[in-house]
Image (tube, rainbow, N blue to C red):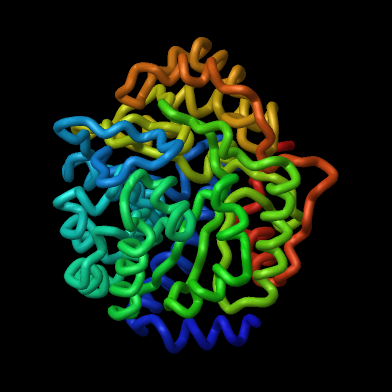
Length: 397
């Protein structure tokens, strides 16, 4: 199946875009992880990757979303974004996940990406705003991969996304990306309502037919002002999802991404390793996007390296998370995070002012850390990549 995937990669996306993906994301990404590991060995934590929520504006209202839109929207200004990117490049980090809200509502985003052709940007988008003109601009830039969120088929998408005809509008965005031969991916938050529709070979084959080159499955986390805990997965469903991904990687010509398990199938938390962190639309540095607690703020020419490497909150979070679970501490032990916030004086970075109360109401639930039920990677390329470039970096002892 690797040969079929290689054929797709060589024939479907534009060659210039494929080269940008291979060089800016692949080669530079590996170098960034190696640089991160060398820093970590010296006790210095500057992430290999940063995730930037550039705006809290959105045209949808999704179940379980932790982002609260405001009027006017809260956005990372271009000067702050420039400082973040330039500071990251100085440390050998060239990859940025761009989130929202809906990041395509940030008016200066494409010009920013164009000023940094040596970087790679993963654009997390609901896809409904990807017109032919937008897709053409992404093709022109070349260093951006649209990662389009699909939360179910027709009925479930409308329910999950709080809109009408969301599924069809999203697929129109996917079609425009294919027309312009982009490096297109699809992401989905797997939950109770969409599990049977999306954790299926039929769904993946449909994506392949639509020109999608990779898919990112992640586990629904009940957080935010309306966490919808009834949507969380059971332990058996989490194991089934893991088994499905491992099997499909050996059978279908599509890249299947996950950031939850290492090469041996043991659970991972990227934020606990320090390999990646998140900056909110208001400029707060958070361990990961759904955890809206922060100790530091960036902006006004802030020394990003100093803020991240000397953050007491991030340091204490890494220790607390790694000592508590290999899985998601938000899901398993929200009480630990509340204790951590109290200990470090971390602030609510959501803009709602209710995060600590929300976390206090959360009931602990299972995450992907299920000892004794590990499933080893069966695809040798995935196993090799995870073993050498993403395997925990000693965070768990």
